[in-house]
Image (cartoon, rainbow, N blue to C red):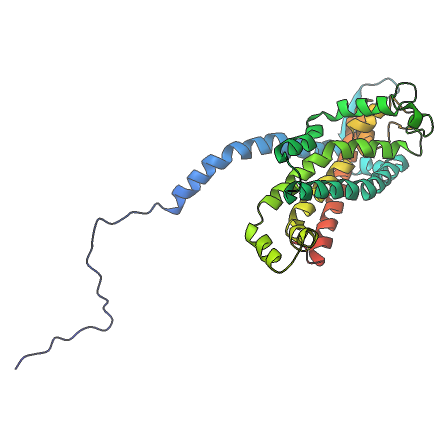
Length: 313
């Protein structure tokens, strides 16, 4: 009688090896590789970004005191004394409100123009697309100080070649100088924002346009129903950048001080910080900088949350 071989059900047969076993690197080797590539950025980020922020926060907690009338100045820990001065400073919060009003008008106009130019370049209605793309971007290559000087001369009634306009409307008066500065900022940054939106348009698959044309959609319908919704993340990104840049406005109004007496040393929040640093009162300037950074963060975060509640990407 032939005895049947019994098999162990718990035993699994291994396939015969077909070649040398491949040794995969462990996680620690991947971690070392990542650390090598990230280390240069991390070091520079810590030295030139995190360290100055930390130093500003520490400086804002100190006050300068003197022993007697002509005694030497000494920095002593003052807690939140500098921040009490910041929150009781009326001109500073007036400048913040001025910049919020500035951004509420200037940012939508600038991004609307940037979106229109990006859609125009992507539509194929114009020839020489590369030339116009470069032409729209060129103003961004002009330094902000140079642009402000150039536009300041154009606004000045005595120096402007547009005297029929400047003699009728004073573009440097207290009522109009803010919007004259807004025109300079718009002229400089429209091309920059246009390039971001145009890059997002270039990433849209052409099959979507072909399907829309087969359904009978025209150029305007495709732009409104396909292009704009798909580039909405780029529009949100440029809006956040614009909010940050608006509250940090410095060079343009600083240059306009030489053209208009309506621009004071506290016209924008950053000008307040700059004037305090020139006194010098670095501790109070550091406190203003910290509060300005927190205000910028709150406004940017509020905008992002508002767009998320509306279902935007």
